[in-house]
Structures are given as structure tokens and as C-alpha cells.
Image (cartoon, rainbow, N blue to C red):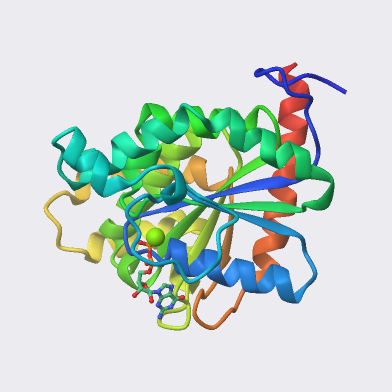
Length: 268
Ligand code: GDP
Ligand code: MG
């Protein structure tokens, strides 16, 4: 056995699932669905909410940033707008994150998954120092996987789809963690088009050409970069509302956790 970068002993379980995605992609609803699924399947889950500004949660969080940091107070105290308030709240919480890791370590034997909800606006978590600190604290102690939630109906135009994939790509390279693309809202629109575009470069190029965006030449060059990226991750279609795709999602998570363990070992 080996030691994590932060001095914790490294464990195989639980697997940490950090749920990220664009605002409104359905992270919180998806997390609720995951909680329901784990409870029904006797999978032992633990839930952490890192969104300080959420009004109400559909699931019960075991650890909730809102219990520690009052986002409205932070806004007043530091004279900040909403985004600054959320970011500062996350910074304050990140300074105590070793305590969160300790709590999970103490319960590790009784847990299969830790489900982590992140703030609505994606960049607050993915492009902040505190988001990086929190991700690193998880990943140096437990197998950690990023679940990138995609709003499938809103990604049906090739240019929007590509922007979303570029963002996922940037997260993959920034965190260097296995990434599962969860194409959400398949109750509204199936994700078949996305799979086709990812598997068949020509099909995506054809869709791109029929898109009358003036950026299309630039976009076609970018799509070459993405072709490489698609090989590195797993994609599943899910619906947080209907519950479709849960088994496939957890299979992808398990495979990603295995991949994480392989990479982690070879890094030492
Ligand atoms: P977040 O900002 O990423 O946490 O997104 P929310 O979970 O708050 O969801 C944003 C909106 O998308 C809400 O109106 C949800 O009801 C809706 N939503 C989330 N998941 C699904 C889904 O699978 N199907 C449908 N039809 N709507 C969904
Ligand atoms: Mg949310």
C-alpha cells in the first residue's frame, strides 16, 4: 500500500464522483437520481453539497457547505456580488477540507461512493484555486472520477456540442482524472447524435458544414483536437428525471475508478 500526497493512506474505496457541468445541465437533479438509485440498490453512498448558493436541495446531504458558510453573509461581509460570494464561500470551505477528508476516511469501510455536487456555474469550481484544492484533496486519498453532465437537448447543434466538449476536454487535462460524460435529459432528446459525432469524425464534419456559423472553419480545426479526446473517456446517456441509464453510468464509473487506480500506481 502507498501513501497519498497529503499523508493519508490511499484506499480503494469509496470512489469519489465529482459532478460538474454547465449551469442548468441538471447536476443537482442528477445527484438526486444517483442518491435514489444507490438507496434502492443497497449501494452505500455519501453525499456532499459544495454549492453554497442553492436554495433547496432535492436530496439530503451528509455534508453541506451551507452548514459551514453562509453565502449571503459572505457577500455582505466582503462586499461581493453573487459570483464573488460563491467563490469566496468555496475558498473558505476549502481551507477546512482536510476535515471533510477525515470524516470520509473514518467512514470509508461503510461507503461505496461519495457523490459531490458543485456550484451551478461551472467555472466557479473548475477554474478556481479552491476547486483545484478540493479535487486534489479527494484524488490524493481516494479513487476519484469526474462526471461531466451535458444538457443533451441544448447540445444538438454542432457548434454548441463542440463548445461543451471543449470544456469537458479542458477539465480532463486540468484534473488529469478519468472523466465520464453523462448525456443528461435523454427523456427530452436521445444522445444518439452525440455518439455518432464522437465515433464518426466525417459525420461531425458534415454536420459542421451544414451549420451556417461563420466560425465553421475554425470549428472544423478544433474538432480534430476533440477526436483524440473522445478516445480518453466514457459516454453514457442518462435521464435524471426518468432514471434511465443508471446502471450504465455506474459501470462507467467503476471502469473509470479502475483506470484511476492503474494510473495512480504507475505515477508512484
Ligand atoms: P444544475 O444547475 O446543473 O444543478 O441543474 P438542476 O439540477 O438545477 O436542473 C436544471 C433544470 O433542468 C431543472 O429545471 C431540472 O428540472 C431540469 N432537469 C434536470 N435533469 C433533467 C432530466 O433528466 N430531464 C429533464 N427533462 N429535465 C431535467
Ligand atoms: Mg445545482
